[in-house]
Length: 251
Image (tube, rainbow, N blue to C red; front, side, top):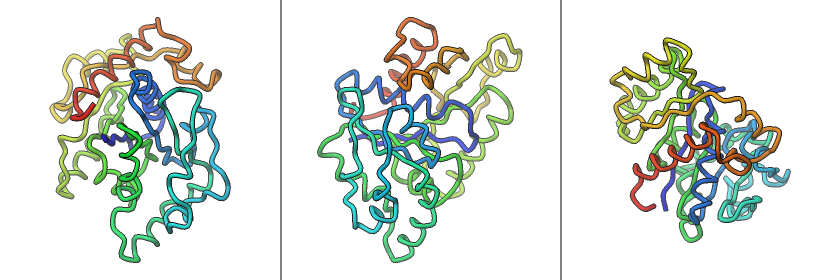
């Protein structure tokens, strides 16, 4: 089983959109895929028409009162399941901190391990912050994919994550940036694509262009390739999935 995460300190960069579309492509190839929505905004859950049950608050599965497997729900797509998030996840960080203080180490990793019996790929959609939760995700994921818009402020968020990995003796080579919402009419976007900063040496080759049709994911409440397979942006996500597969060992 491979575990990957989509993360960025900055919101509005296409993190959830990318996670959902990549999950769809993996599942469409017959790869048993589980996506875990860890963001209290629950955007991934909403796009995949899934809702967390009130009784499945984080404190229950963190304490072991509710087995993590009971949180898994099917989606409208073969080979794709989800652990949905909701507003109750706003307390996830505090509850994780309290549970971890009792001597339990990486709870995220511990909860994911049993899924290896049923899934070949687990995708984590992370909240946009540095926290105990994301630190445990950093320890757990085989690879992390970080969408960035080709601007200096967006690039800075990647640099901060890279610096965090180095400072905490993690492996920065597991960080793979990729450009999103690219508008080639903008000079800065063109320049950064043609001359990417050295810190992005492990970036993925495919860039996701800005396209209005991506917004229809919200109208359709579906991954983009589920209703569009012909546009440039849809083909870009397909190629991005191929890039991601090349970074993994078991798929």
